Figure 1 (tube, one colour):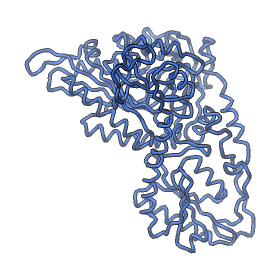
Figure 2 (cartoon, helix red, strand yellow; figure 1 turned 180 degrees about the horizontal axis):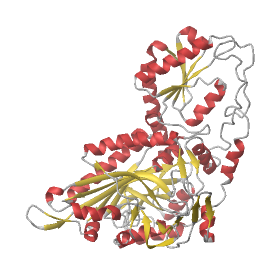
Figure 3 (cartoon, helix red, strand yellow; figure 1 turned 135 degrees about the vertical axis):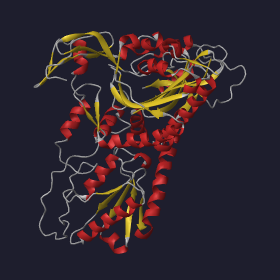
Figure 4 (cartoon, helix red, strand yellow; figure 1 turned 60 degrees about the vertical axis):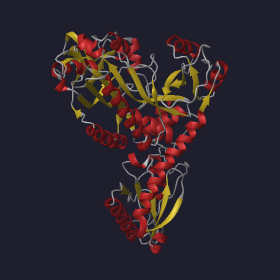
Length: 571
């Protein structure tokens, strides 16, 4: 982009000149008041407090200043060492008391950084590593299914975007548009992809000619932009986010149906096996399905602290609607012209937000071992007149042994921070296991392990350390899942009547209710429950359906119920 390029990127149909990019930076220009408020709104009170706390000197989560050990690496200990000013650690709010501020503070601690455009966030290495671990797993699994990676452009023309009416109506309020280049208006504005169906499918029509071209299975790892104006939340709701999106085409509906469930199972595995978050697999309602699709399946998580569901990932069967719009036809084995059946499926960096909300505590983040970039941190604990260098060497040797066994381990040998400060720092970052090595451990040829998930401490002989650490990490992973599942199940409430529904909703429950499966009834429930905290809606109808006794009535309409469905407020 040249120094004097003009760029306007805004959501929906309200197009304004946003900013002039010059060698001196951004200067506002003719910005609508509504858009200006959204993009240049001051940081939240939680954000301002976080910045103030950077100037507060304290050590550890207790807020009390700790003395730094006088003994340095040499073990001399006679002269007090100049130490770096210790930045304040610990959260200012408790998870149960102010969830929003708690979440903001946890995210701010090395997971994200706030950007100068509202709703956009910088993913720091600590969170990016989690995304890369999930990406490595998922990419390998879809390649076993013969899915190939590709990349399509970020931009899409209005004519293509608007070709599928229901699809564009579903995304129109979120679409960002580029309207200028240099000082000139673009003859035709260009949209930035909110999703890539309309970007990719004109080329599917070009590439698919005969039955031998099927199935076509493509996936891309990319970013998308959805210019949402309400309640931006790191990872959960942002204007730009990372995701993968798979787009496949088949000769038969049976093939498409099979793949929908295969992909959904991979999403379940990401949440339950990697992030240790329990989810429900199910079908979205007609009101909640993907715009323009035939049906949508999803994995749904639930956050007990807020009483809100989270759509974790979706796998859609698009049917033949997009094939009809984009003329994706092929010649079958009988020489007849037929339309393909299509799927699309995606998960995003929202997964990281769900993990933080599920597992974090009043000390900060708690990372499941499978997605932690550092699974074990080794911290020396030297005392006055101790063999400090010997302790440091033992820490380094421990990390080497663990690393050679495939365990992601690091030592923290910084001599300008006290052991207590380091404990709090790594606890806040959520490292699953801490190993402490002090003079007594050196003398007894052992180490002390401290679990992040439950705080349990244990002294372990160094000779069996590697095997013990592997076992501990597996136990931590499983325990985190079991604890999260117990908390979620404690929130599930089965109801039969409207009064029971409202009572459960006010108690922040995950509601399982008999439903007649009518769109108008769901819309009526939304209207009747609309309030400051948001309306209730269907989350999904679980594939594993409880028994529905004959004569059971819908809780909302009084009509015969057809299925059990999860209801609640959601992010």
